[in-house]
Image (cartoon, rainbow, N blue to C red):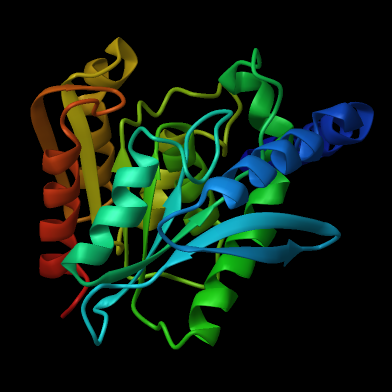
Length: 264
């Protein structure tokens, strides 16, 4: 029965994707944002990556220290872009001061008003974009690669890792609830048991969204039951979902964890 349910889910998802082609990533919106980002970019280099027939933006920023400790792929949350001022830009810029190269990727997006559940048909676009990012980093000599992902980006990162044969050294999830989707196989909760060998930092704010705070114990329990002894949760007191005013603490927690768990 389990295989039947899995097959049924896969067929349903394929039918949904085929029936609603308009729910592919809004590439026109991606281009508008990319034009604005490239024109005003101060820190880092705009790079154009290819995922199948889709060209998308990445921002590569090299470490201020040489040699770099490795590289961090930064993944944004719902509906935004790879230079978003909350969480994303602080990580992609300030981690370079701690010895890390960063590559912030434009993930698939929808219109501004779209809710997270509407992103389900976009999940097949995640793997090609992540693969393109990893290939780019390796072409630059980066072998020690980690992911740092915020909100919906954390769900996407976990999904990618659960279905990937191209592992990274670790993953930082920031402000994830595990409840983004009702469909099996897409939720953080469903991906997490498959990542029982992966070092994971589950970082959240003390004033985060209710869905994030309400599932703290559940996320830890799932990781424990899967046998992941490298799953760590850290709460940043006073931080909201976007770590506004707590950017220093955000970067410090991520940097400290990276040094301890991905440079050995």
